[in-house]
Length: 195
Image (cartoon, rainbow, N blue to C red; front, top):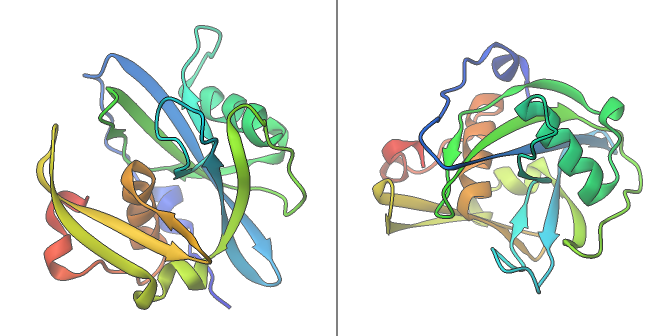
């Protein structure tokens, strides 16, 4: 059964971005299901203005009442999937990323209980647990080159698992998480800028 070694995440010193007009945070929630690590994703509601139908980690924009960016991630996870802040055992933080919507997104990684979560119907169409073995299967992975407004010529990663596709900003976060915690290596030519 596939497992992540989270020690490198706990020891990691993330790169921070402070030149974007908006801040956001996400939580990459890890559950232990049947002896294998799974990652929880949300499928965004189809009516949302930004990224409808896409797979993402629970998260969203910072609000004035959030004292820290971690508080943003935990508040949003609570709103979107009903995860109580005290249920998340935060392991560490990954590099901030820029999005085309002018957000600097801070990703956190943590263990959460394997239980039924309650989605927010207004934002989340579905809560999906994808197995680590599926995310690591090279036959489920593909990439393409694109011109990105911030990064120029980049590689876009696609993970196709159990009928779902993880890509975009979430795909970039997932690549870094898998590189740190498993023996995952994107194809040689896909390693530009780590994107």
